[in-house]
Image 1 (cartoon, helix red, strand yellow):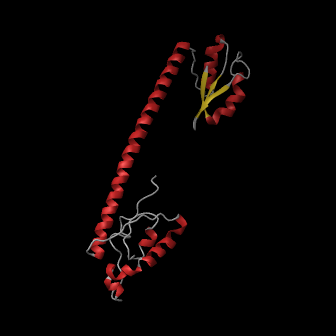
Image 2: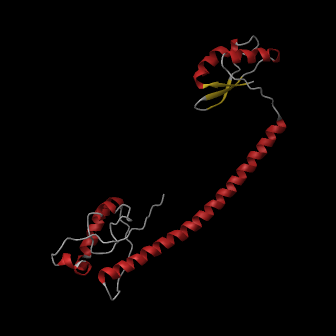
Image 3: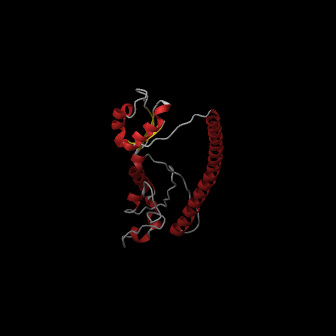
Length: 209
C-alpha cells in the first residue's frame, strides 16, 4: 500500500507503522517521494490485515492508497513520457532557431537605428556639410570612465561647434538629447547624466539578458 503522510508526522510514522497491525512486514517502509508538505511511503503488509491496517492508519491521521501493479499501464505511461520528451525537444529546437533568427534581425535593426540617430544628432549639433565619422568603442567594464575621459580629450576641439555658448564661457553646458537622456540606460548612465560631451555618444547593449 502507499501511505501519504504530512512531513510533520514522518518521524512518528517510522516509529509506529510496524505496530499498526500484526502482519506488517518489518522495515518495509520506503520513502517514495516528498514535497514541502507531504511524504509518500510504500509499505508491505499481508492481505488478510489490509482492512485493519487502513483503519489504524486513519485513526493515526495517515492516508492510505492501494497500489495495483500493471505492466501494461506502466508501459503505456513510459511511451507517453517518451513521446512528450521527443515533442519537447522538437519544440525547443524550433523555438531556439526562431529566437536566433528574430534576435539577429532585431539587433541589426537596433544598430541601424542607433547609426541613424548618430547621424541626425551630428547634423543637428555640428551642422553642414555632413562630413562625420562613426565608430564603435568597447571599453573594459572597469575602464569606462577612463575611456570616456580619453574620448573627451581627443575630441575637445569640437567644443566650439557642439556648444558655442560653453566654448565662449557663456551659459552652462546642457546635456544633449542624444546623451544622458531618460531613454539612455547602461553602464555609461551614471557618468552621462552629470557630464556633457563634445562628441555624440549612443550605447548599443552588448550583453542582452
